[in-house]
Amino acid sequence: MVSGRWRRQIEILVLVCFVIIGVAVVWRGMPVTMTPDGEVTLVPARHWSELPDNSVQCELCFRSCIIAKGERGYCTARINRDGSLYSLVYGTATAQVDPVEKEPLLHFYPGTNSLCFGTAGCNFRCTFCHNWHLAASTPEEVRFLEMTPEEAVSRAIESGCSSISFTYNEPTVFYEWVYDVSKMAQQNGIKTYFHTNAGIRPEPLKELLPHMDAVCVDLKGFTSEFYEVTSFSDLEPVLNTLKIIKASGVWFEITCLIIPTLNDDPEQIREMSRWILENLGAEVPVHFSRFFPAYKLTRLPPTPIETLETARSVAMEEGLHYVTIGNVPGHEANSTFCPECDTTLIKRVHFTVEENNIVNGRCNQCGHKIPGVWE
Image 1 (cartoon, one colour):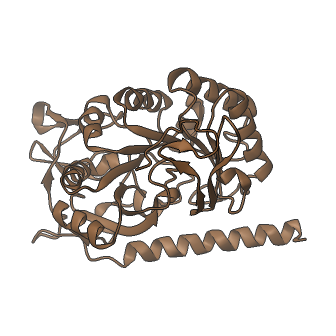
Image 2 (cartoon, helix red, strand yellow):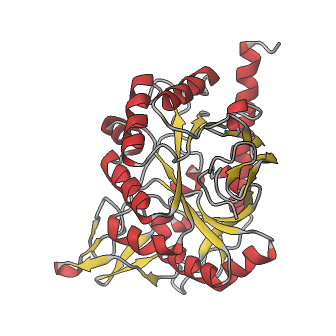
């Protein structure tokens, strides 16, 4: 039996290893494209409007930044140059092949790999961000691979990936590239999805969804106070985004990072589960993920496994059918079970699929239809 003190030291060591690997992935790329005067290449942005005095208003996310000439938006990835808005991160990305389960998307082509892309910048400022080396950086501070949409799709095909994922930092801030790559992927039979904080505005979201096969949404908590204090953001746009995705018919799943003392109150989780049931339905998969100390939130311990188990029990008591626990390798609840006969539908160990007992979208024991994208 490992003592509590040694378990804590092992968890910290694992966290440090994850951070080192993440930084190494980012810095193995090529330099971001630069103009002759040493600035990042500018690509015209989408979703903005002109204002007096050469100012512009970005209309991409909930912040609706008003940006003066020569200034950047909150995300640092969009700049006003002479009264026009430009993206600073188009075609500049870190790339890595990951299992789709890592997002996590657990009802979407299980056991397949995705080519995952991320850039610099974010429209949130989460104190617990695990990808802070990207999200909290400006385009000039990070080294990236440089590629066109055609090259991104070709790289996915050459890597044997079934899908392309936009992740690591918030895909909203590299919207233009996400949009172009997704359209190109559709034409070549490659699926696409994105992992989002859901702070995007309705119009750009509705424009993007027809070119997406799935979305993984971070529902970081269920109070406005939590969003304001830990992410410098707002809950209401996130809930609105979830409703829009549901109405679109695009497959989506929800991830909730459970942080000790901040968003682990069982009654708040109960309230959140009721909202999901009433607005999104019982069959949307919900994943409770274990927190590890990161970035500016290192004073708290990793989430106790019992806390995650309680959250899962509460969500299932409220009527949600597919609730899993993540970031706890080997935990039984990392697998997916049939809500009708309790058969293990997909047995997982962390990100590895060991069994898949879904046949033609149904449980192979009782024939119950299982929601998802299976083939």
